[in-house]
Image (cartoon, rainbow, N blue to C red):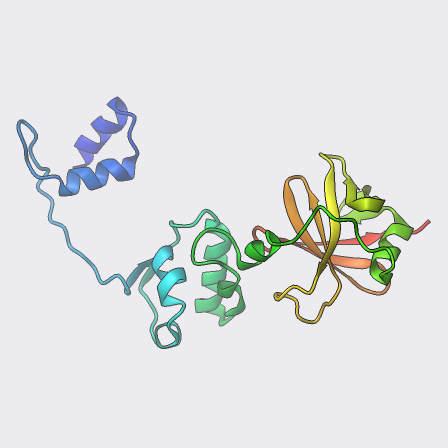
Length: 218
């Protein structure tokens, strides 16, 4: 098996996993002989992949809390590292919150909600939190000091490409915050939750990455 796969990797433009499956399961035909390996099908609840976990296993309370798999291969979704960290936290630290932030398919549940936000309109300047942002006019974005400038009408000046900002309103992920603000910069949307002093915590919609920042008042 390994010699045949090594030869195919050297001579063909094929994916290693595809070639492995082909050599394992294709029957002999013509001049092609089988490699002679024996296949053993394991219980897919004992040896999960991430598709089974996030689409089915997670949704069954009796499985999620009453059964622990032997292995879980995080290979189906593009957010491999973040999902792996959340699954590890669930099984080894008892922290369940993280596994629920993801869709069964691609992306986070928060990203799905973010995509529904209307970005074209101008923020309502009569609202106190919007007025506070415009009064400052400058934002420290993490270590990028004074580099983000929210404008009237919803334009966001950034060191990268122009972005948008505005009212996100109530977001189900943050029920305690009624005045969440969205900001789209660098091709990614973020949700900002401000406190009374102008400090904020930003959550990137795609993967939940957190970043701290603040409004700068002269």
